[in-house]
Length: 212
Image 1 (cartoon, rainbow, N blue to C red):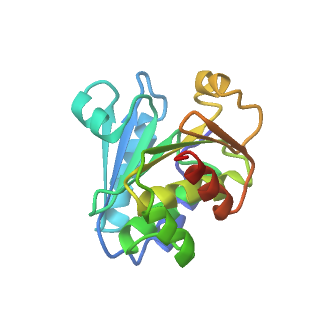
Image 2 (image 1 turned 45 degrees about the horizontal axis):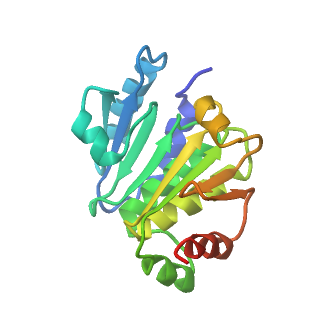
């Protein structure tokens, strides 16, 4: 499998040509990472595509404080960070459906935030307790990008919300822990399970029920 190709670079250039604020891409690689050369190539290419983008690559376990600050406990992991320190978190590689979410998150971080209804945005910003959403996905799942993006959108609106988009195949032990037999599957605070793609109102309802 080729991780980086010309089509991917063209997509990045086409969709990220109008960025406003800078976005940092932090990639944490596992030991013996087989795509190291391709990720280095992506890092160099991104700098040429947009001056608003930067990408750094780190070996997991070599930057303990940084890993703790960003909540990185496994790799491969990608953290997208905007100028206001809001982040979108991926555990896996930016391929398949995850790549579209990756690009949309960069745009939202750079251009001012996600496009959600005023009601959903308002209620999300009012969440006043810690929320951890884990969205299990695969690169071939057609509904996964929608659910992963929604989870990231909620996190971008409120720093009480942490949202992880997790490749179920790469992190198979975690998938087994949460009995992931189909995707997308969302785990919220280790208490609520949501299978499939549901409207934003449903996800927010399930989150707010955790406060009761």
